[in-house]
Length: 84
Image (cartoon, rainbow, N blue to C red; front, side, top):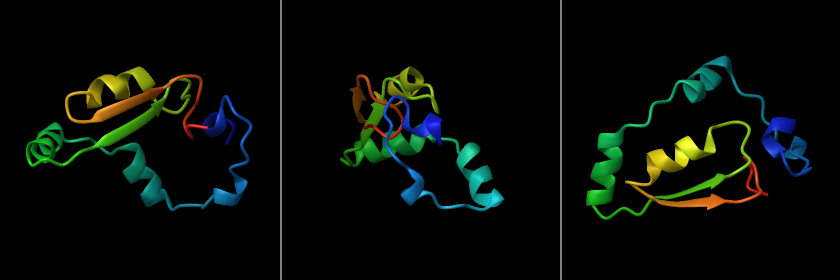
């Protein structure tokens, strides 16, 4: 749980929900489809992506670079995965 809140000390325990192994597998192996993202953008759908510079769960720079062609990306300094 510390990886989620870093660098803050926010208590995530009230929000914890134990998921199934199937849900975890789906989350860990999800692949973003660039063609679908492009199609959404072409249809006028506005996508907003918020990513924290200090995220220890994902590679924040990789996420930012991936979504820039399809979305408005907000790269927030000095915050982690929960953006607090």
